Every structure is written in structure tokens, then in C-alpha cells.
Image (tube, rainbow, N blue to C red; front, side, top):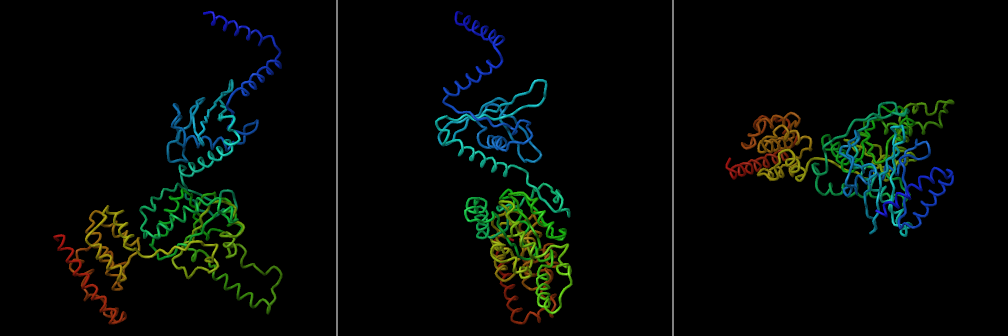
Length: 506
């Protein structure tokens, strides 16, 4: 009781002194006590406000990074959290509740973060900040590396957790809003993609090396970008591969339609508006604009310019108001290609030979990926995705068809499997029918639909009708030797199919 009475007396004395002493002296006393406390404390404290400056207009990126870091890495040790979900994120996020502390460790040292929230008197606005407490004697060795660690983890968490967008240019690239977007929720991944394992592993390793290559690209003095050329027949999976790359890297996708771009200036404006960590796609590059024709016309014009002088203002008029080859090259690896970081540029084409060689040289398209018909591993991946079947008696028959030139694209196989997804036997027999049609050089677009409707004819050795129904003119065009080899293959295929059916008790 005596101690309590002494404490009450001391508090009363402090209250009297606070009313008597001048304000300047009280401020000095408070400053002195704070300095004394900081001197005697074994910890150093750093405050990170939500906004920079006195007016609180400029947002502090470090505050946002700390909030994301605590959300991703260390919030499990806090007893009270605030849960939320924003429109730009696909998951529930949590943050440290007001005026609570969370502990963290770095390089064997214990650190703590305190989330300070103060409400001004007679106001609904809140003043928020984080206070970092670290051991004072280890401050020089801990502070800078730890904040770099916090920033790196926060950026990675933001990249993975935020909602990805699919952008397309709206024809107003010279303005601020040159792109319009929708949420990007494509389900394609490298796990479900119909690719041969060797090619899939090469792509995954290359993308991983690119995303982790920030220091390497800066050391070598190269722009942090990667160019891919995807070429192959229609339906070979080029768009699905782009979606899988976007899902693997967690990047936004910018689908650039060159026919909507008026000139090179608008193309540069659109490039400036794209964000870091994004994929810029130009599909069917050989059909978008006549770049090869531009080059040929320039060569012809340069050969005749000495013979016929041009009037003032006439030169280059044919290039005004349109995208040229030089503008596109500057977009891929010129000065304007380095106005952002961690970008992937993808061109697609059905006919690689139709693409101008200037777009294909080293340094512009770093990786050329040929996508063709399905191999056996890709076919098994499709059957597993659509049917949930990992092995089947007719897989050997399918492999024989592939070796004999009956390979189909993933889109063609996928359409047959989707039509018959309730019955794996019917679906795989339908695929074999379509492969037989291709081996004989039939019209696959028509024939494989009929084969999918009547797959039981495969077991009988007939497909879409008997051999006698095929046009004899086509047989002569193919040549007797080629035709006889195909007939022998079909006889062997018939015996294989019957033996497999008998083995399974059909």
C-alpha cells in the first residue's frame, strides 16, 4: 500500500508540473526522455508510414511491400489478423490488426513489426504505419539486406496472388487507355498440355531461367526480355502453349492486333503502356501486315531511285499512317524494347517460311518452337485429360498409325475425344478411324466426323465405308506402290485391332 501511495503522489506531481511548466520545457523533457530510452534500449526502431511527406498524398511503396510480405511470410505468428478480399486478387488476404505486433527472423536474429493505426481527433481518417524493431548492434549488417528481402518476397507474392488480365488494343493507342482488358482464367498448364516431355522440359527450364535472370541480364547489358516464335499447322496448340506460359509465369497477356495499329508511333505508345512481367503476343504474324512485301517494294524502289528523282515530300509517303517492318523490329529488339522489364514477346504463324527473315534472326526470336502433330506421349496426355485413362489396349494401334503418317494435331484429337468423352473405347477407336483416313489421303475434315460416329467399323477393318468406295483416281495419283503399302498397313492394322479386341473379350 505504501508503494501505491507513493506512485499516486508521483503521478499527481507530474500532473501539477505539466500544468505549471512552459510548453517548450515540456517538449524538451519529452525529447530528452525519448533519447535516453533509445540510448539505453538494445533495439533500434524504424517507422515506415503509409504515405510520404507532410500532406500524405504520395503513397509509400515500402509500406505496401511490408504489408504484402507480412501477408505472405510471417503472419502466422500473429494472434489477431484482418481478413479481406479485393477485386484484383483471387485469394483471401490477411494483414496485421491495428496496434498489434508480429515477430520475424532473419539470418538468425529476431525482429518484430508493429502495425500502428492512429485516428485523428474529430476525424474518420486513420494514420497507419509499420514500426520495425531490430537489434541495435546488428543494425548495419541487417537493415539493408532485410529490407531487400522483404521487397523481393512482396513482389513475388503480389505476382502470384493478383488476378491476371488479358489485354487487347482498342485502336486508340496514342491515348492513355490504349488497351482494354478482361480477367484471364485460361485453364491450360504445362501439366495438362499435350507436348512431348523433352520439349516441355526444355520450355519450363528456359522460362524458369528467364524469370530468375534479373542479375544476369543486367550484368550482360541486355534488355530483360525473351522472344518466342511458335510455328506449326492450325490446331497444333500454339494458343494453349501461350496460356500455359502465362499461367506458369503468372504474367498478364497483351494480345496485340497489328491491323488496329495505325502507325509506328501508335505501336510505340502501346508498348509503353504495357506493364512489367507481361507477355506480348502477335498471332499470325505472316497475315497481320505485309512485311515481306514492304521489303521487296523497298528493294525495287531503291534500284530505280537513281533513274528517276522523286519530288520533295514524295519519299516515304507510302509508309505514313501504317506499321512498317522497321517499326516492328524496333518493337522487338530496338531501343523501345527496353522500356520495361521481364517481358516475353511471342509471335505465332502457321507458315514459318512466309515470315520475313529479318524477324527470325538471332536476338529477336530467341526460341523457335515447332508444334506439329501429336506424338505418343502427347496423345496419352490428351486421353488422360479427357478420359482419365492412362493405358489402353489400342495404344499400340495408335502408335502404329502415327509411324505410318497418320498423326493428328491436338485440336483434331481433342475434338474426337470431347465428342465421345463418356466412353474411352469408343473415343480411341474413333481416333484410329481418323488416322486411317489420313493415311489414305482422304478428306479428313469430313471423314473423321463420320468415323467418330461409327467407331465400331474400325474393328471390322472398314472406316467410313469399305475400301471399294474410295475414288480410283486418287489411288492412281498416289501411285501403285504407295497405295499397295498403305493397303498392307491397313491389313496389319486390322489384325492388330482384332487381336486386341479378342484379348479384351470383345
